[in-house]
Amino acid sequence: MVPLYMAFLVGGSLCLIGQIIMDATKANVTPGHILVGYITSGAILSGLGIYQSLVNLGGAGATVPLSGFGHLLVQGTLKAVEQRGLLGAFSGGVEAAAAGITAAIVFGYLVAVVFNPKVKE
Amino acid sequence: MTPDVDSRPFLMNKNRLLWAKYGLQGGKLMQTPDQKLKELDRQEYEELASQIRPKPKWAANLLWAFVVGGLICTLGQWMVNFMVSRGVSLADASSSASCILIFLAAMATGLGYYNQLGQRAGAGSIVPITGFANAIVASALEFKREGYIFGVGARIFSVAGPTLVFGFVVAVLVGLIKVFLTS
Image 1 (cartoon, rainbow over the protein chains, first blue to last red):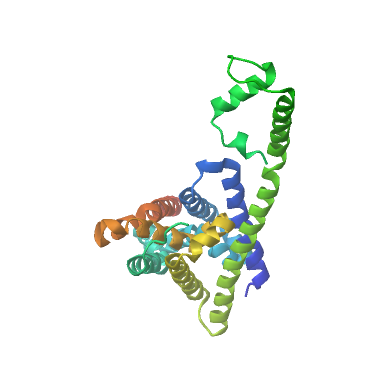
Image 2 (cartoon, chains in turn blue, cyan; image 1 turned 90 degrees about the vertical axis):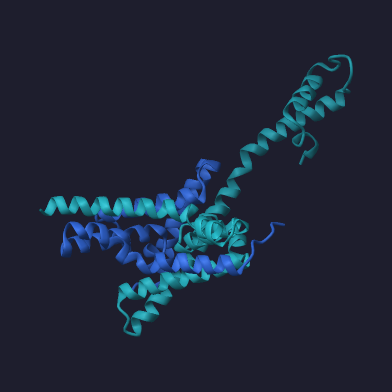
């Protein structure tokens, strides 16, 4: 099991990098860009075999940030390719990440239906 | 602070600086030497202030992002460790922890707490998967008045959509590369 302080250090560092990118580029980088950038770079690093060592080191500190979501997609794809070949390249990613994607969509929808937008003060 | 100069439009500011330099200019307003001095003081102050101002903000932003992001990941790790100690496989525990974090973040966004946190924590609240859930709920809520199908239902994906698209595209590309390398 990964100790909690390693999750804190690795997760905190990944967020720190995001904050540096946002502060250095000011208004040009929106939260949406950060999310897209993290999932893309996580997936690429995972494909190159680099991200797994970060997961071994930091556990949830590397899987909870969105780059870990990209890692999950790529590792699912690679595993499925071993079992099912070409079909696996298309099915494996979503299979591995299904729980997170479905939870986000269902919880997101329900919360948006139940709550009303807060007026900014 | 010098709010009266700061809040003026640029042109007005420039005119005031001209007056400060040449005294009577255009014949309308005249500044005493005392005002000239004040104007120069202000310029100097602004120059100095602009050099100093961003630095403490940078440090505070970075610290907040690091601590809040780290704590969210620590919460995830605590849940994973708890489930693994109860005999759940690491992959299932990790997925479950993500689902719980997504649920918590969606609720916190609905109640208005997550955005308050985000104003302070910046990337610390965006980069974790809770930021993904926050983006989904926030954009859905924003378009609630357009209806539950094409308002909430469609706008859920205004940030989540691009994120998933890029994730899927890279994952499939990596998979295809592996197919070609192994065949």
